[in-house]
Amino acid sequence: MDGHYHQPNKMQHLLPEELRLEALHQTGLLDADDEEIFNEQTKLLSAIFECPIAAVSLVDKDRLYLASRTGLDLREMQRKGSFCANVVESQMPLTVIDTEDDERFRDASLVTEGGIRFYAGYPITIFPGCCIGSLCVLNSSPTQPSAVMMETLRVHGLQVAHIISLRREIFMKNKFHTEAIVASGTIHGIKNALTPAVAFLDLHKCDPKGLESRVDPEKVMEVCRQSIRTAVHKLGQLIPANRWKATQDRCRVTADLIIEELGDQLGVIAVADNVDIEVHLGAGSNTFILTNPAEFREIVANLMLNAIDALRGTGGVLRVQTRLESDALVVTVADNGPGMSPEVSSRCFDPLFSTKRNDESAFGGSGVGLSIVKHHVGQLGGQITVESKELKGTMFRIVLPAIDNVQVDDGQAQERKNPTFLCVDNEPLVLQALEMAVQSQGYKTVACTELRTALSKFTEQPYDYDAAIIDLGLDSGHGVDVARQFRRHRANLPVALVSGRSIPHERMESSMEYLPKPYTLEQLRAVLQKLLSGASNTSEAQ
Image (tube, rainbow, N blue to C red; front, side):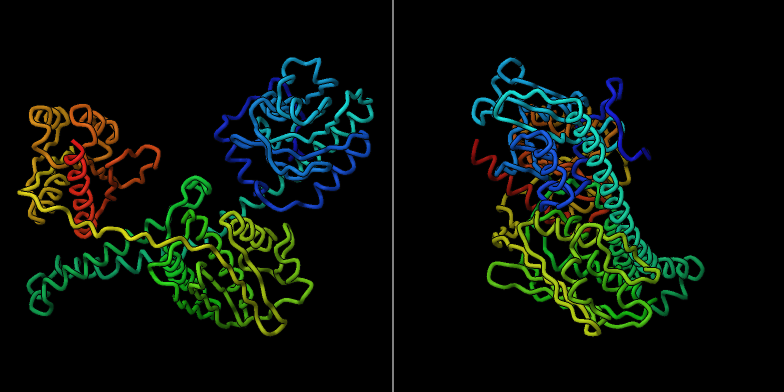
């Protein structure tokens, strides 16, 4: 045994459920198509045990997902009270000769509704402490398996675990490799963005009068502001994709914006290989898809990197286009490179099948990039196809469902006399800048550097304030918890939380807005308008 798969051990430390689920999702097997290698295992076990049903069962948060099954039409089942959940939680093999004699499973749905009387399962442990499922055999009558049968189940269980463990490792390496390449382009963009600001500030330091005589000071300030804004925006792109839960943080996303950013980032890398990247955005800013931003970035980045690799050495053109067709977003990624043979293009989405040339590839060649792309596209309810001819180039075509363009109010708040904002931040300079920015919009402010003072003012007259703007990282407590203290005195008080870090969606409550640091005046204005709209709705409800 080479260490990629693991024998069950009663003393083995259990991985926390959250991390176990993360490892399971990293395999890319959930909601994927059947893989022949697992189908062969389940067919063989069914024959050896002389049982009609065998499956590779993966235990997700609330369900069992059958990555392969013989003798069953079901793709997934409820996790609660299941045999396979017991295997995962104990990390030990489980054999139930007759379910009617075992009180643990007598009332399980597979027994009462499916008529299952026998179960034998072996844990699929992909690394110590991480059991993601069970390789199992089931029968509708009580069964006494022989020693040879159980040994066969054990050996095949270890093989399945080994295959999945390797698959996960390759998937993760490919994912990090893609992120690293995209990040290198982003870092270059940050340096470029900051260059004008650094140059102007140095000139001002060395010769302020000379600079003012040659250049309009207001123009210099605007260049510096724009330079810093661009750098901050690009810095945000460095957040790795694995900080998002692909199925949990999906939101309405403008595909054109993400593709435009990728074109800028990868353009820096492509130049070195004499590859021109052309981006034609025809879908528009009003075309949205429901996705995780990192998930969509990974789809497009993988396809673009594949194209750059295909053009490496000869140069050429990589063209990315978007357009809206009926109710679907269509994204095409095409190159005029060497293309693929019919045999290669027909297998290019197969796991572990590489389309790379025999010589050393710049961006990998693990054979999982395109299978990841297909998996992600499928999870988003879309389709991906490929057209390729040798010496003529390759084009990948993605079709994703576009969601309705919900008309969002432009944030014009109801006119009211002198709206007042309670501003709380324990950094005096930051608080002063916030006050000035809010007051520049024609609003009043009451500023506090101490939470105790802010609470005291608020509890005396809670309805004197239209909304509160609170720093997320106050020394006296987390901004969300502080907001809740205010809301004990006035329910649904509109609150903006200010932070340089992202805030998990589950921590946010109704009538809460997020203002990222550093923010522009335009961003602040939009948040203030939303807060005032919330204050109007709250007062009407009261």
